[in-house]
Length: 224
Image (cartoon, rainbow, N blue to C red; front, side):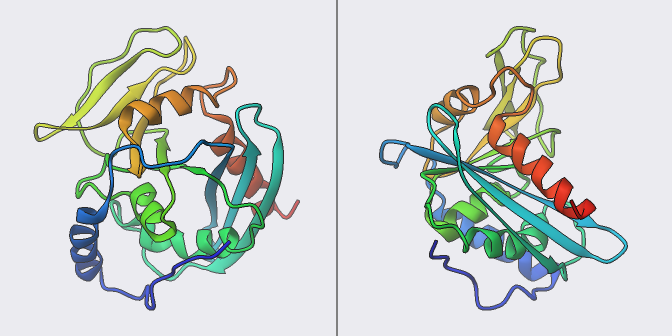
């Protein structure tokens, strides 16, 4: 898969924040995609002792979610851990795995946030803009915003808001479990992000694409 990668990821934190502020103006938050026939999940695991990141991307046929390809990469992470700037730490190794794909996914689910970010430019927005692909952020915890707990039924959701903006949704995929935090990344609306997340959850709390990507990078980290 062809990847448009920045010339230099070695930015100071202040420069990275300034870049997010500039790039967020280019994010498209309406549906601009062709019929979705493949979806992918992308994730990364970090070996804290060595500072090496293990990235994985798993591609599925949609809507039956039959796996058709998976790729991985390893790379030393150089950007420090700073909340709100994780894209600069993780995307370089994610792109190294995505570049190996022979099947170009129509939609990518990221284990992280999209619009639901202090500067409205989380990792799903950044990755979607670089790839010019529709992306959705599905996170296990909140980074920013306020919400009311959604009803304890599958598919129930409540708005996630911050400073008067609706930045995502708090979605109950499975009754009796904690909700997930869904936000659009690029070239997709919140309504479609919610619908497609529910179309891939398969009865678990975490949607299959990011759930399997998480398990994949965990095994890579353990050397299995």
